[in-house]
Image (cartoon, rainbow, N blue to C red; front, side, top):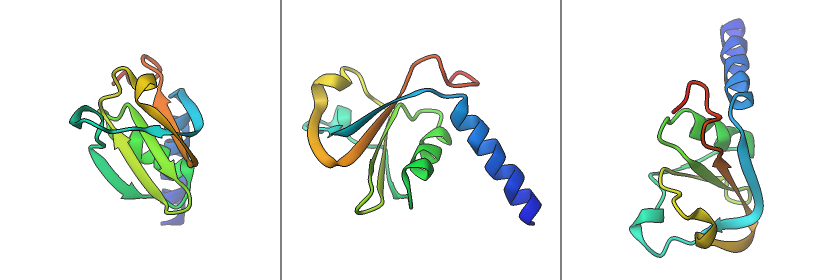
Length: 105
């Protein structure tokens, strides 16, 4: 069982290495309209697990992680994302760079 978990974990790490994400510390999406709302809100013990949550969802284009609350939000619509960002020093936002996901999704 431990070997199986180790292989699964190795596979996830390889998935993360196959996707390039832009990381922005201290910024979060300002969701004044429904186009910016997360499609999943969950918890993750750390930023890596939040990234994994995003990578498991082919429609995930961005994720926001708040370490103090372990809150992980997944977004599938990040059109014009730079104009929808606001400062929040407790948050890290990561955006999947288009064309870097293998297989492309």
